[in-house]
Length: 297
Ligand SMILES: *[C@@H]1O[C@H](CO)[C@@H](O)[C@H](O)[C@H]1NC(C)=O
Ligand SMILES: *[C@@H]1O[C@H](CO)[C@@H](O)[C@H](O)[C@H]1NC(C)=O
Ligand SMILES: *[C@@H]1O[C@H](CO)[C@@H](O)[C@H](O)[C@H]1NC(C)=O
Ligand SMILES: *[C@@H]1O[C@H](CO)[C@@H](O)[C@H](O)[C@H]1NC(C)=O
Image (cartoon, rainbow, N blue to C red; front, top):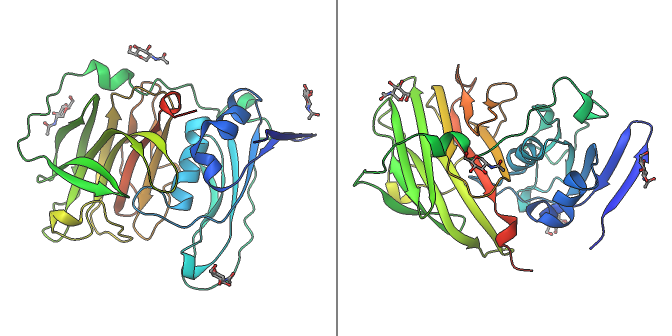
């Protein structure tokens, strides 16, 4: 394991690759301790919906860690590899997702070379502050278990066009306020919580997750399975959770596997908020927490 950095006249850079992004060393150390301005991330990343497609997770990591992040994914349709981007701490500046051809694509965008000195640098976030203050009970008898990428979540269905919902697993309670354009009969959305410890497939790492997601179809057994398109517009949403970790990566993924730059904000009390909704229907809105201190040495 190495911590690789280099200086330029346009800031300090760090490099790591692929699943390094899921772990404390070297990824978090490069940003928090070695204070790089920009991460270079060449990768061969197989898209794993609903929570770990390339553009979704990599842009969320840039926001959660508050660092510039340049992600260059390879393109291989048989391995479902596509999705590259130029991500600033406050929003994605450019991204590319291609399932049509085997072609590559050049992305160009302007970034602050020292994002910590930029006026748009986001404030530090306490990811549990809001959620721990509000009193809301998880008193829904209709909660049910479901699987996302081998992990067992607790879900609760959003049966109404708007409302306030809470779902808890162990110490993590996830709170959602939402308003849909309309409650469609042909689509089901759930609010889910995961606080069951380690994810153990393709790496062992400790997670806490709150997620609003579209189920694959109207059968509740399909909630958590990959789905790439949706029809339901959300006019507003606010998601928060009682996280034990302060490393949380905020994801918003829209129909067609597209990002939502500038269409949501992170408040310093840990709320992921969209006041005016998104430009396309929602696939998932997620607070993806990594509790590095609980990882095994
Ligand atoms: C990069 O620049 C910083 C600040 O000027 C300095 O502390 C550091 O040692 C340099 N690192 C390298 C790898 O040159
Ligand atoms: C995609 O990956 C497969 C399996 O590793 C490999 O056989 C194939 O050559 C790759 N295709 C491209 C275009 O790189
Ligand atoms: C975040 O806020 C909670 C609730 O007030 C507090 O207990 C916790 O220490 C804060 N965490 C950090 C990292 O400041
Ligand atoms: C949800 O909670 C908010 C703030 O706590 C409140 O203003 C709103 O009326 C609630 N909405 C519903 C549909 O209960």
